[in-house]
Length: 232
Image (cartoon, rainbow, N blue to C red; front, side):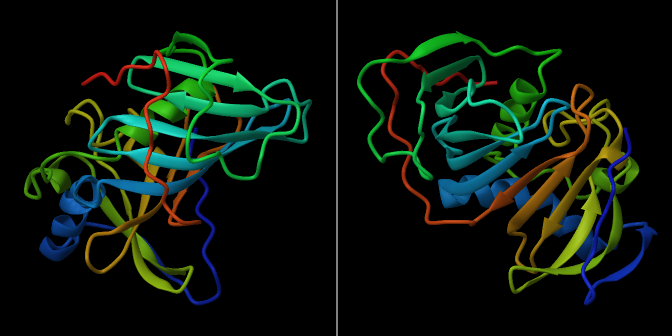
């Protein structure tokens, strides 16, 4: 599924073009910037044929876990509540009227855990992708253009001037791009390598998933009872 790029009136869509060395360096450090920050506040929109889901929360890129409030949009409320996840496990805390933002301290009880599904679930694929947007080291800037990464254009996002780039092929790199087709992954990256948005096509989703950063104040992710972070 191809990702649809929507640019504002101030954008400069002239790509795709081969990455310059400076652009390759920005893309190479963007996941490392998330790890350096320790954690980032995120809003994750997961589309679906029966209505979408929005997660408002935080991801701890050093601890390998995410946590937030989840609400359905245009669908029933069966998925509403709190959600916490690692690379291997998803825990949910159902709530009839979840808060707009998850409480800083997760509830001590009422959690239901299950293994994170590697295939067939757009939600689980999105949660896995979101965690992979942090890395404890920069990627290889020289290999990124060879593996399919490209520059698409420029945009302004929440007051930040950003470059938009497609990611490298997941077949050629480990963890950098969450999709097998590099055109399905786009990064909105600031002049210092800060990641502000990622849009990615997920096979089981009807439209691209959108992950926005710094949409609210970051709240450190506290461990959820029984949920142990796992390394990739």
